[in-house]
Length: 423
Image: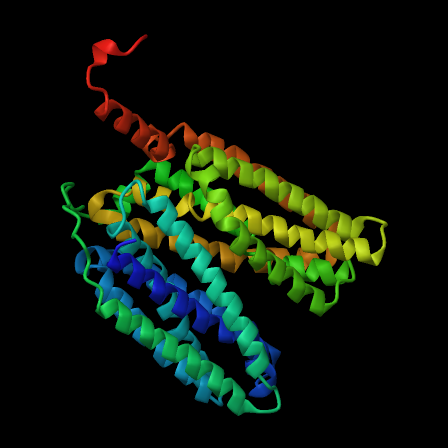
């Protein structure tokens, strides 16, 4: 990594570390510590999603016009204000307002960081750069959540103020690091900037491969991330009799698999077609849902059900480790040079939509319709495989298999005389 990329990744892991301090305890903080009730806590979580959906449509154009650096710094400062506001808020309006600032700030960071990684990487290094980002995010979230769990005390509101203050400090550190980054180059934008009615949105919606990738991305996030803390958790407790402590163990297993497997699978992933890798993820997740089905619908012992449920989260983690060096670089490679920010923001918007719809659909199904819930998400996982293979037909070799294209170019450059190569 160059100096700019190292600073970007350092800021990335520190911001994730700060988020890990508060994300697992936000519901408890609003509902119990501030004594605002479960309804208000649910509204706060909804505001997080709504704030992201509101700001992301405008984020991409700002990144492409102003550059990702000022957008990232502004988003980090906004999130820091929201974190401090959440720590001192005592009433419903203050909590909701702080949640809106925090949700908007953290949502804008995603496409800004992704665009910075694109600008600071080449086709040869982009896959590994995004894999490193995902690895560090999960590592930061896991360590932050672990330390935060040791500091938090429901009987002392001051302990939560400490957590939110640490989170705000990490966002300020991210802003400070980003402000010192000197981008190694500004991309030479050779394609014309979209103008006229519809602008970049019209270009994006007319790009069939990107539209198919967004549909695939929605299914990916809906069938995995949208179920972690809602439908799958409800299914585990209601159908499989899983205790809350086991849910924590399952999430820890998911993070552990990502941290351990990320760079082990990277060499396998980067040497294969991206759409084939995504197709394999769909099959792995289908198996994960079958393990979940056994945990809740099988007739084994409680120990076997617990092991199967934890295995489900572990297999999800393996799929995530395969996706991180695949999907984000593909979004960047599909984007015109003048629209990288808009493409990243559009994909982030799709992710937020899936994370909003996923719990609303999966939560009630996981709690009450156990068999249909498992069947539904096995089919969604197989749908990922079919959508990925279909997307592969729309991609160029450089987009779907950049490693092979780069290798072919190197071989061609090192041939001293083509006439001496046997056919």
